[in-house]
Length: 371
Image (tube, rainbow, N blue to C red; front, side):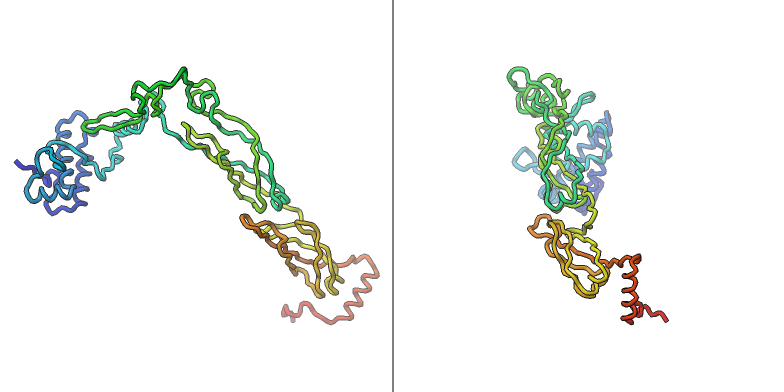
């Protein structure tokens, strides 16, 4: 008697592919043997569900079943053998179970260890490290090369990072025959897994390394050469590849990131690659004009103050700023002039100021709209 696969999944013959997949997931969750331990009926029902899904989820098998009510018999190429559970897990989310038995099962597949034993993993990249470094303002202008003292994890010299000491010559692991893989079976499913005896190395493990206590890593403090390029700013990160913690199980070493903190300058204020400085000028210089010396990051230079210069007026010095990271150019320096009044304690100065006041009738506040 032909089996009604649609009825097995609770569907009619007009069911779509999505309907079939949805029904299979729902019933498989409900009847899976791991969720119904010792229930023979649930186990048999689960096999029927798998069989129905393996036919209806395959377009060729479904077409043959819809036409003839059965799928080809016998073990010929591509034929489905009734009573045999094949595949049937496409699109199935095992995390829906939340079952400890399933978690244990897949832990074993991925090379996890049983209770009381630490899981062995493959090569793991080492952690990146961060190091905060304070640099002077002048160091940012020119760049600096220095050394820092850093404590990090490195591969243990005693065991070469393996965590165990090899006694005598290496020998093939007897559990896996040197392949690093073993097979396990759950029901009708067979899986290849990482050998738990050798951790996948295929070689016998010696005793635990006494220097690193089986970790394969030890702590080491060393002085590392660091080059800080010109143009870095607060918060900039300089990457030193391979100077972080060593990896586990032969994994690559992490990187070291130098985080920059720049000490402020007493004269210059930085804005990106540009620098600003305020320079005082006298009343005569502002009125008559003058040539004055001003400091820059690269030494003194002379600028021209035109007649009638006002407080707050700015003058640009090209390429006197800070290097632009990754470029061959530099920013600019902006000089802001501010007028310093003469000393009022000098009687001659006061007399000249009164003469100046009488000689001009300008009102600098006329644009304020004061009546």
